[in-house]
Image (cartoon, rainbow, N blue to C red; front, side, top):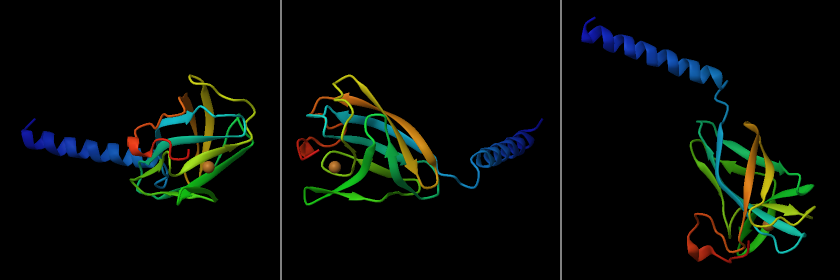
Length: 159
Ligand code: CU
């Protein structure tokens, strides 16, 4: 087989592979990858915050529209403006981009906890996306001062 034939064959094979991959995920259905998910140990059983980075690995924009967890029957999506948090109905996850839930910024809010998780515990959350459907995530419960990979300057800035 000549080098030229090999190249052509390789190109044909990779094209087939690409088609197979896009065929698998349907009509450009968003795929979410969640990393660095954590919950600072709550002070009491009234509320807790959930933080993570949600990466959209597809060329289609999506929205985080809600979340559920065994820890609370009332999970809300909060943004922080002027150091005050407020509930929003959804948050955009840009195509080939990220939605960052970080201390002092956007977060998942757990209201009325059924228990008070301690450092080392895990909290299961199911995120709901408009297009990608549900994505299950485990939050590691960390020290109250933990900020994940966010700059240290945001430490202690609310939750
Ligand atoms: Cu909040």
